[in-house]
Length: 383
Image (cartoon, rainbow, N blue to C red):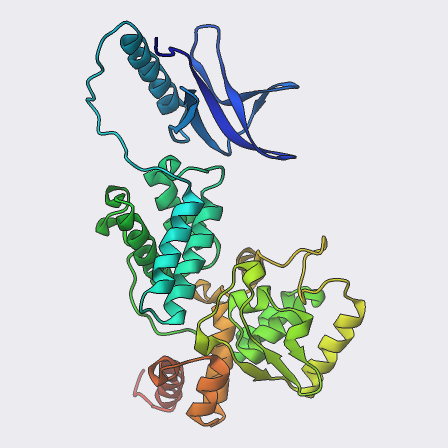
């Protein structure tokens, strides 16, 4: 006789790792949303996903408590019908997805690596795979990944990491390729693609920088000075190690950081010269540092919340809100080099640009500045 036993669990994080814990129910058999049974009693844990356990196997049913309860009752009815000699008619399309999420992503990356793809393409897809796994907290099986997980990654997760709309669109394409490979196209459609438009970059004016330095905490000056004077990208400053600074040569070397899930494009790997003054400030900071990472939190962890930090600092100034992000410092670095007539090939090299068009986009900032100067000299006959 087939087993009629089926139970609902939630796969949740604990101090010793991820565990399956039984879901809790009210006396009327209604589920208690996100409440699980622990050795110490009931506990509310919103992180994680629900699973049915029956016939010695786990079946993912998503992260919504109400839907998980509905699936539990449906499965109990099916098993009871089969146990009594009946036949279950499938009225809903069942998923043929199997295996773990990590395993499916690894197989996809192996195919990409074996194919005729540029290394940069492989690195970009690998980054998406790592980020997607992290965003799907508590999900172990591929069948447990829902449409909500995919949309959360493309929107909330990537925005929180400071990815712009164009970058999110590119990562959407990579993730959709993975989903298509596993016949999960209905969970991420073309209509879900982030909308973006190519805008001219914005840079900080001298008076805006003066406002910023005035309200920025002194212990943060060096980090933002490095952004301004070296044109570093957000992930480059977050993963910078002391070993990346070539003291004798006076250079910062940007390179991949697999341990942080950072795989920059080939042209992004570059050497950036440091001024003697900036090099000395870094040397003084290193004497006080106990971490391998240059910029850390008080607990010694890499700085990850630069976006939120910049929002708080710029909010104390009159700088336009469109400039309240880390890339503004990079744009200011580039326009400063161009304004002081540094050869374009040299600017491309320190910026990490492969295409001259990427560098020339920053000329738009200079053109606007020149136009303002010309307009300021025009005299109109006004009363």
